[in-house]
Image 1 (cartoon, rainbow, N blue to C red):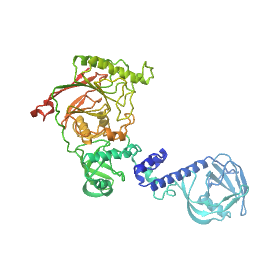
Image 2 (tube, rainbow, N blue to C red):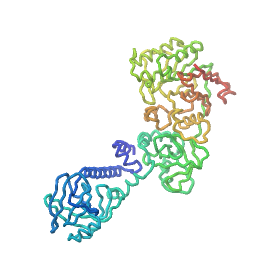
Image 3 (cartoon, rainbow, N blue to C red):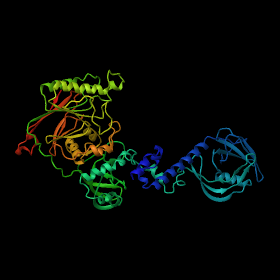
Image 4 (cartoon, rainbow, N blue to C red):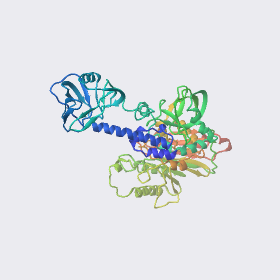
Length: 586
């Protein structure tokens, strides 16, 4: 199925606009749909080409009776006599569609159907012509005109125009039908009509990275213990969701939106996790008192599917049994300072907020200093203006870290977390650690995200604003505190970035790397989540989540500090019995 999806995503955009993902399941079906599209395009091309030719039939007088003539080609003048003893049919190229014609002395007002392959006239005109000696044999046939209208042919008339050797096979008569395009002749199963009339189908973006990264989401499904075996996955949308049932069912899948935008009650769908099926069903939350879901979230849904196309949700299960973290086995008191970039204002490269932080570190030397990127944003105004710097981004960053080490000494352990927003790093998440030419014994370069163990104290950290990303995309109704909700998302989905997938202007997500290096295998004691959201300190499932804020901020930068004391056995149940936290302004 992944191979078939890659073939589908390799098609030109106009093919994917015409062929939607749910219209095929096999390669043969996909090829058949592309053939239909190409046939339709060729037919439209011929129609457009025919409309570029215009002819006029000139005569001496006009009458109000309409006659439609459709075998004129190009702009050459055609003149001659009608065979079977009928004379005086003159065709002259002029560029207008309103003309008149004389047949056996009878003057008839005409309209040219330029480029058509058939000649035809209405019933009244046929009677007039037949009165003057032209024979028309009865027949039944549908024909589409050059202006895309459909008419019924009731008679056949053979004529021959001398001088251009054009055989006009059929004179088609009856009142024109202002009806549909030529759809049924090309698509007997009404595929085109359904596609044109179907509202809010799955967008291309849903079916590119989202469905190609199913292996990542399947791993999360199994790791979350929501599935006991693959049979339950196969039952997901094949047995339950494709059949209209009145019974209460339980099914598992991945939350997505059927358009490019945040989730809302009318756009939320459930996508099957089985790579070989990829079925979807729309979710209706009208019966639920509260709901909190986001794109990419693995959920178990309880509800009914009475019509077979909408699942009436009664309960959404998003949580699992989590093992709380063990208290840290530390012998001495540890102090931490956490700061997150940017470290300078968006209109200069002076780095005043960083200098203020260094002054604080000189007076209050912590055991551990955690610095999360970005350190020099690629989107910084000065960098975007192509201002020439005296040194490279890498040299500038190395000088920055060297200055911090020289200021606070080498007794403080410094952890530097990379960011995809930095000008000197790869703009891909997960982001590799930053490389420096000069090394320091107390400086450790970490990738984004990272999980470290400091004497039994487990710390998870990231420089990516996953909190803001999820809050911008989720659907939340009566879902409680937003900070605890987002932290719970990360812990229960076991991922530093469970959102699938981010907006294109936010970051570039490598799903293969994320499946290996963005997992939360166990709940950490401390979880560092820098965000543009308001600073917070929250204990969620025994984990202390910290948002230190941004060091450089237009309304005042902030950073966080916390102290951990060796916990006594009686204090281990409550984290705040042995941990003190504070968010400070620069």
